[in-house]
View: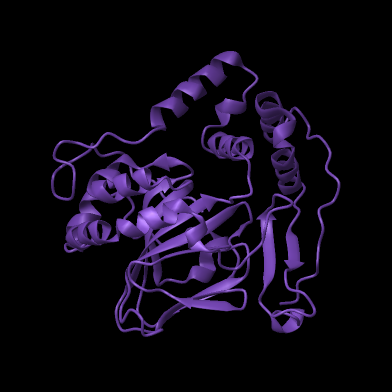
Length: 328
């Protein structure tokens, strides 16, 4: 891969007159020394640091760095977190709870997506493609339909998929993002990183063409798994990874970005605060009135959306809001 190994340089306090410096001050005031790893991560990102590291060992299964894809590449990097390609889902109660909801989620998904043109009309940014240069490796065959972004539920799409949204909420998934993802037949996703090591990625295999035939696969590092209907996988997408759909039909999954399990509760809250500031910059303002307005704005969008009595596809549930693109 031609990646030089890097290690985090020392960090210094940010200028208090910049937005990044104001966010740093709020992090320290709100969370104190328990969030120091997050503060360092924020500083490193502002310094333009990119973490690059071969995660194998010279005498292990991934012994040759030049012949292996077991490389971590992260622009957003918290030091000291465990690195694995695939995690054992049996170690996480929410994975089992989610898998038990598969039939109900699949039933609702089939019903709602039966009429794609009507879904496009009622939904919010339905089957949007990659929106940033960093996401171009996903290709034109990869599309998403978002239920949650950066910890905020999309009330329009939640009201189209109420049973799915409730299943996710009730399973206790530590999610910052929840979305359906489609992958067109006979397409691939090129080798890439998602650039963030403090979140893991999880998939509930929803509608896998020729499930079990090994035609729909994902490779993380040097480890390959196939998607099988109803199964939950959990893996680290700060490691180089790629995917392929060799079947003749579209592959659908329900996808999650979840907090890395090594993070403390304080660190999760601090990282969520950064995301909130990126969406509502007034949260880091030095002006008390502006900060109060921002906090009220944040309060208004947090929490699980109200499900209309007629919620569900075709039921007119929820009120429309302006279309907005999912940020990556």
